[in-house]
Image (cartoon, rainbow, N blue to C red):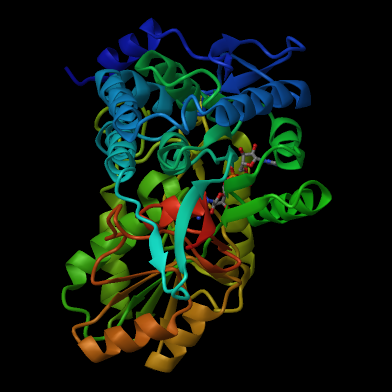
Length: 496
Ligand code: NAD
């Protein structure tokens, strides 16, 4: 049954997770402190969540280190590791509806997205890395005749994973699954806006038989729990997804402590370029609209800049507006909703400020621009489109992380490529053309970690995900991500 009443009933029947998962136990913070977990759906407090501090983080890191050193996970036979990770995936499938409802309540995304994308995508990610864990080969190196030399991948140790609120479960799984597959222990801090699905995964992992201490979940505020993980001298690596501002701090914390590795997946201002020979304007308009409005625009790869050739600009923008007008904004738990709430009042106000600035800087407002659904008490902003945005303006250069599209028209191919590259970011780019030479040229010249031709977000789990420039470094997804969580060891045996 899929109705608002059904999902409200499910929401009412779930024991909302609010405790940390440390050393195989669900625990309150040592201090007893909690924080209000607010639902963006209606602005109400859902539950109290443990506000972990440095003491809790230290306990989690100590437990993770102990688990790593005694080999209860690292030294387990690979068949057994797979069995446990697959068991966790099966439990996630069993509890898929619960996970989806928790995600939508916590974060505001439409329940249909949680059910059809976030939860199955997270399960697929886990199964992908569980399947891959016994297919990571080392190398035999060329060596002098009296030597046998080989190179092995060794797990790093304790991974501190710090993740954002926009895809809380999926971002957590992009880190947890490859890190565990390589034999590491993990201490994960979910974002304070959306901690519940990560806490639930911590509980399910214990049920699946993951040994205590191997996966610890420490909810808490970024400046306390997150900072404590990043400054901890016994954490070997920080795997981070979030903002550039926090990414910068993490590199400082690494320098101030044990020079732990840092991998950063940061923001973006991704261009979506529609050349004059776009193969299908209707399809491209559909992708351009959903490329920015999916997940209320709270997507690091959101196609927030639409660069469109002047010869087709007017009809194309009309088509994008027509698609945007079909978007069903509403209650995240209503199955018909395709566009939900922004994660918090703070994020909503950020988007509204950017809208105000874009208007002041001369952008033409073609759609939306306002807060909506005020009666709900939640945090809703209309899908918003600004036309004639100058490439130098604020909306063309800064990440909003909300449902605001900046349209810029261009005359020459070189202008489009120049505009595309003219931001501090380099995460994703899309282009629409029939000309294979132009597609290759633009894909080469645009500085972005992901380039999609004639499709938006057309990327499989099998491909690395991450950015150039200030969009960060290090890659999630694909087999490459496994190597991020391992060190190379060169062993050379001198033969008699
Ligand atoms: P954020 O940087 O504010 O927070 C991310 C995480 O860092 C949260 O868990 C937060 O508690 C923690 N944190 C905050 N201050 C900290 C500190 N001093 N020390 C340690 N941890 C701290 O980001 P956000 O607002 O949650 O997420 C939005 C950002 O994430 C956007 O910039 C978006 O583009 C980016 N993002 C990137 C990707 C990607 O894969 N490239 C994916 C999703 C989101």
